[in-house]
Length: 112
Length: 111
Image (cartoon, rainbow over all chains, first blue to last red; front, side, top):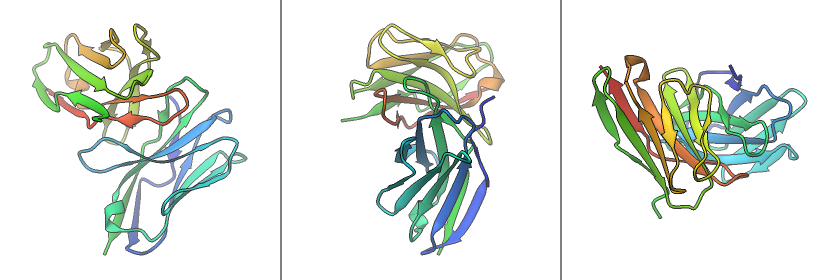
């Protein structure tokens, strides 16, 4: 099957720390990448995306980094809050018009 | 603006029964998708549609059928439910170059 994986299934941090969630993707031709957040009992929510012609993109408290040389994607969350506790998925798209392929997710736990 | 709406939210089926899951979006999106989510497996694509009247198979299509008779609706059918189809089903939609908007999911249990 496809292989969009995450390096760690779980990550535990203290409130206020910065979190880094990593993802390795499989297809060097993929042109679009997304991070989703999924809280318990809810559908995935869009966090941030990045296209393959970029290596960094920033949002509010979040930054996505793309390293195409090693096919690595990361999500950085600044000043992590308890409300950030969720499962985070990366996803890649091999080409425009095709479906996203999702990784298995990393569970982020934030303790006060 | 409701986004993506899935019905029902919960359902329990007996083995061999049939049912249809409905997904409706009000964003005029061309593309729609059905995924299933199982513990430790992430999201796996069942079927998708690139426009009204079109459907295509995803990664795990067996045991499911879909229809896209109207642009705003994407139906997922189970003709003869099996316990292996116990899962949480998510519908999503998007425009071609954008990320997905997901529904809140349908939790299906087949006994």
